[in-house]
Length: 193
Image 1 (cartoon, helix red, strand yellow):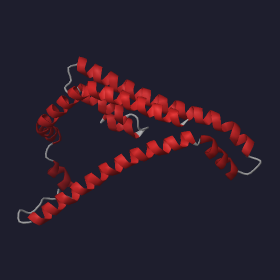
Image 2 (cartoon, rainbow, N blue to C red):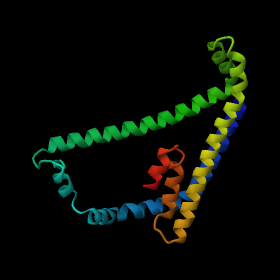
Image 3 (cartoon, one colour):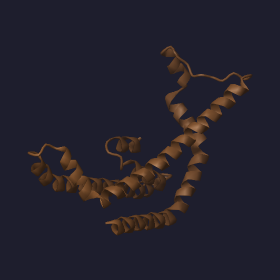
Image 4 (cartoon, one colour):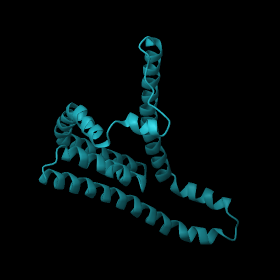
């Protein structure tokens, strides 16, 4: 099982590296174009929505505006936000690595973990739980594989379809949709937005 885990990780890393090598030039080009066009896109959104301050004033609130003499406060807020973003990125990387390590541990020690969990149940319920364990694990595995396959299909269909329609950043939109669709329920809504 340990060799299987290592082989699966190596194959997955190889596939991701190969896909990154193929797609990275196009994705980086589209990202640079998108960032260059972002101010104009934001102006378009402001044109559609009007001035946001007017809507906020109707509800009795306003956007905070920094004071010109408060450089320390602005700098402090900038440093604080930078540290917050850095902590979020580091947390995401550590979380991803923890998921890989925990998944490998579960695969390698599946039998011992299963016996330990069965020992927590009352003796009368252990045979029923043991019989249900294998079908439940197969269904969970099928669900995860199906979610990944569906996400890849959504990303490819969006990238190809939008590029055929002449939409800018079609590959970038398809890649983001594929990544976000992996998250059940919430990811598809975020990808749609």
